[in-house]
Length: 117
Length: 111
Image (cartoon, rainbow over all chains, first blue to last red; front, side, top):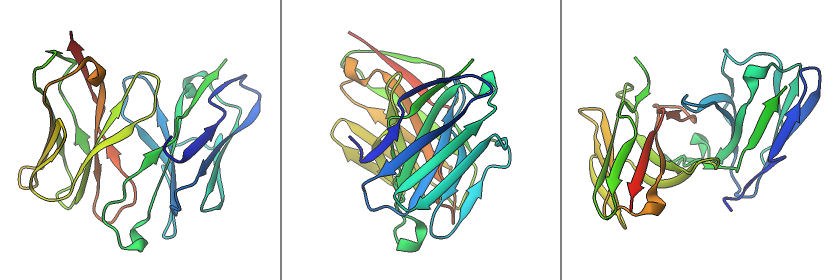
């Protein structure tokens, strides 16, 4: 147990559905991240929320919409997805640079395995 | 040029041998370097972090960093079947919260 909890663990959805992924961290961190992991590809950063910034990877389609209501919770809203969006979606958290640490160790949740039919 | 490169294919090592993994990175200003282990179907877990040139040892794992050559490596001594996993190299570019990851190296320890 890393202190980062993701729900649901598995999700199957059709291309017309709307669903949301949830992430919650209990580590007192103030930066949270969404990553996509597809087979045989590097982990791809989708979004970063921290005290200093909200960063979006410009290559992420608008059918993925993040929401970060506070420093402990992060959501990824999904709508009209495509089959190629099927992947493992990972949430991570860390202390942000503003806290004066250079370590910035990121801790990952267990992930949501998403299948788009 | 990719930010983080791990070019080796799957690595098979006999139980008890040393597994050696290599990683290069492009941002010369990077200051934080990490190795994560990921079992099939699971999420990455941190096994080593290193911030200054030289070696850092933790149990059977040794990380080596050479900033001049922009190179970081991981040695696994006395490899065990439980070490069979994919190992991800991650680098934090200067001034960033984010991490850049390599594709990973699969290690298979043969009993």
